[in-house]
View 1 (cartoon, rainbow, N blue to C red):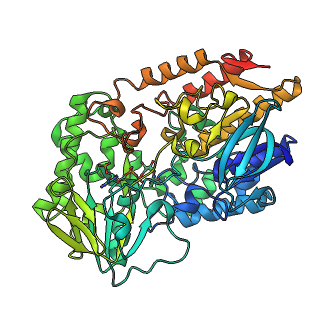
View 2: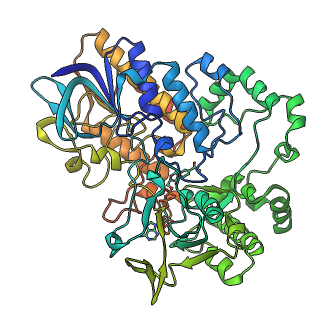
View 3: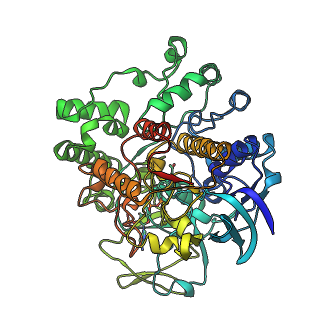
Length: 543
Ligand code: N01
């Protein structure tokens, strides 16, 4: 059986950088990827309207000066096709594909204790062994399709935003139903409305969404960024969410919009209603997100929620539709912030119908369409925009079996237990990239990925240089870290009693309700990881 130093599962941005970095360290690496090419999230989520809400300049790799200097971003916030192009460019430039096996879904990852090696199975067939295994399987990569009665009987086309086909999808002259109004649904709905004959939007919970920035990248702005990449990367390391908020120099600043330059107070409670309304008029709804107390003070949160609702009511013409679109049961900041392009305006179109599932829930799917209450809507296409089994889904699906035959499913039956979101007790030499308990989805993903891969590479370098054979955390360190993760999340809007988000696993029936990402901020997390290393890998057992 073929043996590698290290196997990576997944060829998204984490797997790609991992392959490059570990190869550079002299390791023999093999990557297994279920898709037919690189890109992960950006390979699978090709639905119309998909784009990133982190500026392209920041949502890019920082490990190579040459890569930074040679790449042009057409927009400030990139659309999915441009990010996928970038992923392909990275794969070509660093010759990554030669060590990646595509069309290879990992079905088991088993620790062979006598040998101290991980054995990897692809489509139930054992393929290879490796000393180290790095799970780069992504946080939002296992689509959630709710089990609705009669779903299999539907005779039309079924799509999921998280598994959008590579081939063009023709929706013209089609009656299309979309279920779900999270980030994916909200991005897709305005585009689907343009493409289909009639769009029916099935909404279970109304969403707080604010208009996305839609600037083309100006040449002089890109040049300015290029000049300052090192500073941008340094600032990212110091920012809570891994974004630099880099300020352009005066000459370029004059050319960009004035509103950016307006200094804002940090607390909503410091302003009166009229001033706030004026700010929304001038700067858009997004201004509400810039007040720190909105996320920590319930009174501030309610002021923001109320202003938000008033603004939506003024955009959407039909009163009943506007009323259904107003979030009522939870506050801003509980769920992942959604950004849109013309979302509310789309509901003013005559070829778009909102079905409020709070009033008339989905009874079942019929061969012809969707039945809500006592009415059946005939549809040609049903699109699930129903999200993902987040953070733990892909790891559990990979059937990981650790020491003494204990499975990860058994270990995580009451929720994910891991140290720093990097390693799991009982699973030596297995690493998770942006795993539960790390900033991951609350951080610029590219920054989080690079920090994890660099940490793992240094760790392996240390083990190999010192003749050690394995590393894994102690159960005590794991428990202490989980307690810390919970403690920092307490009192934030994320864990408010009314909040049911995928961060908490609340979107998947039966999933343990635990706040999974680390909310203490990237800089604090990174310095903890670095201090642990300095302290001779405190909390880990090295043998
Ligand atoms: O998934 P979601 P998503 N019947 O879980 C509804 C990232 N992302 O794919 O709220 C009817 O947020 C569900 O309703 P409810 C980003 O991190 C980023 O949209 O549970 N409806 C909800 O409306 C994001 O947070 C970007 O009541 C059902 C929707 O489906 C994450 O991915 C773009 C249902 C699911 O929303 C996930 O976003 C896209 C049912 N049985 C995604 N089950 C950007 O960077 C679920 N729903 C901009």
